[in-house]
Image (cartoon, rainbow, N blue to C red; front, side, top):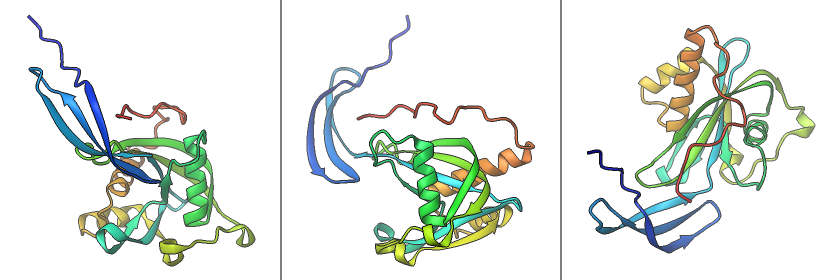
Length: 205
């Protein structure tokens, strides 16, 4: 006899912290066998990121300070899904223009990631953007706070992968996006599998 999977029903929720980017909550969850257990996690608004690849197979990497780790990290242009109703591709295009001063004419949905599913419901959608042109100087975004010291470097895709293996790129979405792009390149750039507006994967809200 097949036993149906548990539903992990949430019977209560306590909000421990409420912020702009994320909340911290405690859910009381019914476990297999009927026991109720507390699970702490972060409710995150979600994010988008972009592998921006030029005609020479160079990728745009941004170098910026990340306070939780106290260091500058090499990352993809990325940002929060924090404008209600904004299509995710538009959010990604906005971040690409703001962080890398680039506009792309060719977009493809690359991969979706649950970044830390043991501690957060965060999902980040990564896009591949090609056919790049620079944003006109007079239209460039004026960066502030940590982004005021953000720098951008166009790095050959193979060199970016070497940076991963040397431990110079540790940002999870960057590693996933670069790896997925390398796979597509090795396969001769096959047609996209999913539509740009495909639903995000499931997550607790």
